Length: 216
Image (cartoon, rainbow, N blue to C red; front, side, top):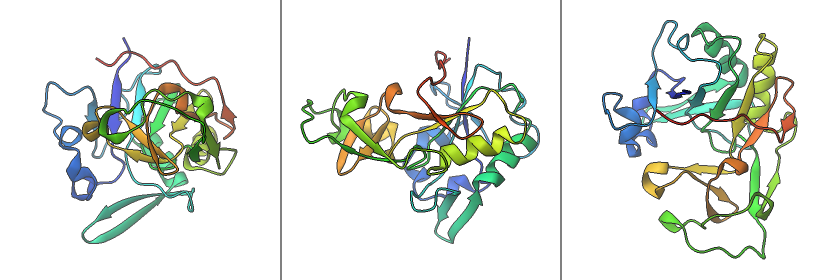
């Protein structure tokens, strides 16, 4: 059965201002957690099987799609998409791995909500179930967003089966919203699998995303 892993690429991730709002993500001893938390040095990603989902958590900016960030009281630390790909490889991620979901803001581009969308309210002031067609996506093509650039960087390192995904907008916490959300323009949308934008080893957007296994 596939597992879901949550990976923090920055060493001081617990000092990040946003991370302080995610206590469940930070307590790897919590037996009720749905994620297996991975951080630190060494071959920590060697245990991740091909069919497992690896989620990577950091900040992102649609204006700088080649970079990801850590934000603490001491300032901002920057890592490039190529740096992340190299870090994943050095941490032992098998070359057969298939799916990485970036929990960075704008990792899958940007979006707005179609004007005629009518949905009931979801948790945390989000819209409820929103069809993918109601989310008008932008900057989600080759080289325009972090997931595309990371995917191509991994492809260049021999990850031929990889798909890297992200949400098209500012990501909002699943712990505070009762379900993972993102901002489509000024509207909080309750995120669904079909909203994710996936990019193959050449950095191209693909509609055939991975089959994510059940969380154990």
